[in-house]
Image 1: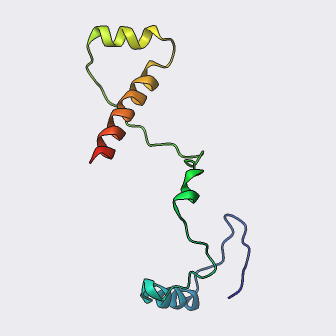
Image 2: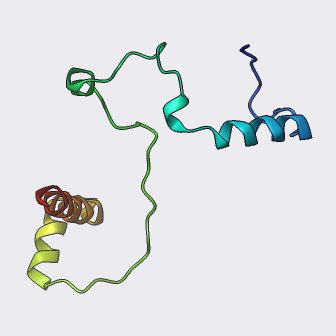
Image 3: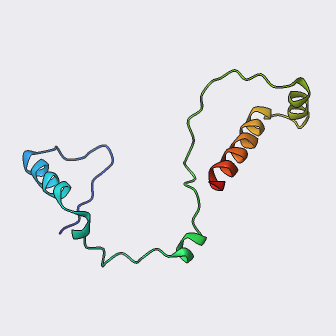
Length: 100
């Protein structure tokens, strides 16, 4: 095995030789993969894990009807009420997803 560095956006052409090599690799059973050079991940390894700082979920434009007093409360906390509403909904969603 050899290592080759490529510049982003300047990848080599996909030759028939490369296609054949990828096809052979795709047909190999997962059990035949040698992981001996990769340390195992245990619970301790995940303790310091963080979400990708570049992750941005897709936003969807929608219309939502909320009670007037709820909207007044959200807006009374300053700029960014839509972001706060999204955070509240996300927290409720994650709580529901993780309880199952």
